Length: 239
Ligand SMILES: Cc1cc2nc3c(=O)[nH]c(=O)nc-3n(C[C@H](O)[C@H](O)[C@H](O)COP(=O)(O)O)c2cc1C
Image (cartoon, rainbow, N blue to C red; front, side, top):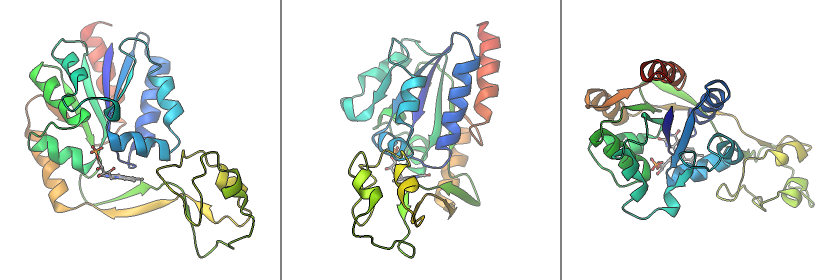
């Protein structure tokens, strides 16, 4: 089975999405996954230390490539694969509120939103896991320095040893690769991740409702729903 996986810049559901795809790759024989990664997606997955994981899921051979929006032209020619029927399904997980809004209103100006547009036009089933569905959510955060705890040591082992020189008096998340070395090196426990509680905006919840009504698109309430979809499609397609 050949799946296209759209990754956007959401921290919420990101690790869970990777876990699901990792497990699928381990258990489903003949599963090929091509990753279509938005600009923000590329940055955020690096912050959460998932760049190497992505290379293991989509190692680079034909139909197992990683396509990064940063490297694609504005017209996203790789999205043409959906019109050529190269994939059995397109799964967007996680989908930011930004990407969800764009899809809801027919905008196709990023690698992920354009993939959705071409997939629907090509009759390829699309499954989307939006992050902001309703109520309140708890999201895993990237690493940060807790200033209440930081002792401002003259020699700061996390800063000295950061492989990407991402630490000064704060962590530059655009340089951070989420390796967690700094967390282990700070004797005071001043660097950590953690959870943030967020309220879902009415506008974002409304966009998810719009998505549920769109042709060719199925909304999944969490990444765990992906395994069932893949198993069902494999049965139907007799893989
Ligand atoms: C660490 C981090 C985590 C983020 N998590 C989320 C999130 O969970 N949901 C969301 O809608 N946006 C989140 N964002 C903001 C998006 O990355 C931003 O809106 C971006 O423009 C989305 O672009 P895309 O939809 O093309 O991927 C996060 C940004 C950062 C830096």
